[in-house]
Image 1: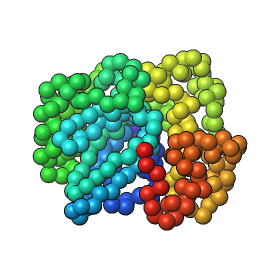
Image 2: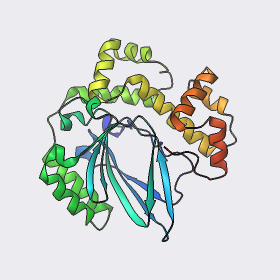
Image 3: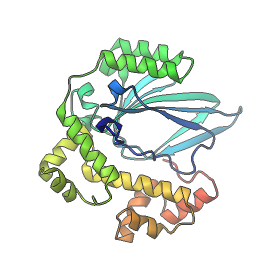
Length: 275
């Protein structure tokens, strides 16, 4: 498997039971874009008149460029969960960049857009508004992907070796269960804690500790939604939480309810949380 085929964001993040009232589909990028783009995604729905539904998400540590209701926005890393309400029939299309990989496009530290969104026109000028018009009129996902990828190719930045290095660290945080604290990262990659913190603030927008905790909580929420009768204490231990009270605090803060209540809501197939 090549470096560009290694996932640097999880498949989790949708809270509760998946695919109720909406569908979420993911699509790989073209090979020549895979160094910076993780994937494309499309959320679509069709509800009867007078009805509304919602989905609550726990964001990943990466930038998404999103087409929603005719406008394109550049969304920095969101540290808090958020809820999207949808009615009638519609779709939202996004390009998810690898953690750290949007800095060459933005040209300034990613921490400057953490918990915020800027319009694509602010970054790319009138061409972004033209792209939004064309993408809104697109007939299907293949056309959406083709338009988005062509736009990015025309603005593809010069290589930045730090992007690859940060991506390797993030992949280790996601996949390696032996990493349970930031000191494990500095030892593994031979850098100082200060250098690591500065790299993440510049390239990712959040701290490495935050990324590690977010990935573990993503998995905890997914496991409890999928295996609702499984002991939350067992889930916590599997994810490297050896202090149960610490796990409960982290989970409740991020998800909005304790793990037992979350698993119960998923078992009943009700929307467990909102932002």
